[in-house]
Length: 269
Image 1: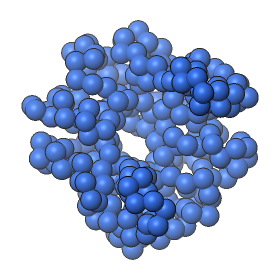
Image 2: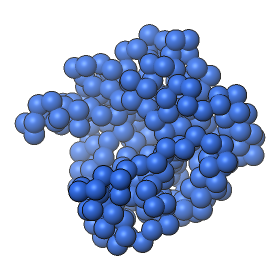
Image 3: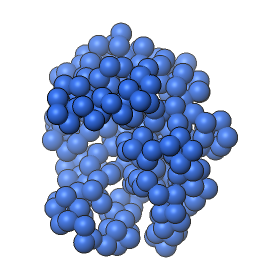
């Protein structure tokens, strides 16, 4: 699978990025490792994660892969945190998620846009990932005005100079993104956002900045609107054609699906 430089940045990622939002749901650590290895082996060499995913366990699961595969790169995020923190045991995470189906506060994400929390979060993410840097660092679902932009900009630029961050930007849905586009916010130079072939949510981003960079949601959005009877390969081919210069996040709980992703990317090259 070819790699691309994201438009408007110097960040290099694989054409398909493997998303780890549901990685914890796969079950055993060995099976999660098999899925991550299969993704890398089939060319999905960039991985998208966050402290919220698996309540910190997605980053921990990636640590072993990153040790074994020095060519792998990663995006992690800041601003949304796990209820109960990211130091919980696997059993506690399962229990909290299960109980949260009845008592929502037990599994509800926590939003915190203080710089003090952000600085501690970056330190903790790097420890969980077992690395001294991340290639991309994203503000996770912010809303316009929820943080002190100048202070965050200075902090992120300082972390780039320290070598702990390669690039930074915003990871958010189209509703939140709209508040950062008129005029384009300084942090909107790198954007990860939802998109689909029918609703074309990222059109507003293209109108404001001239390009898409990282997009996601093509399969899940289509399934939510159309049910299970969708042509996933056709959707992903369409996603790569629509975001022709950027990257698309995909995910699966099955290691054998990675060959399909690789074949779609190769055919679309």
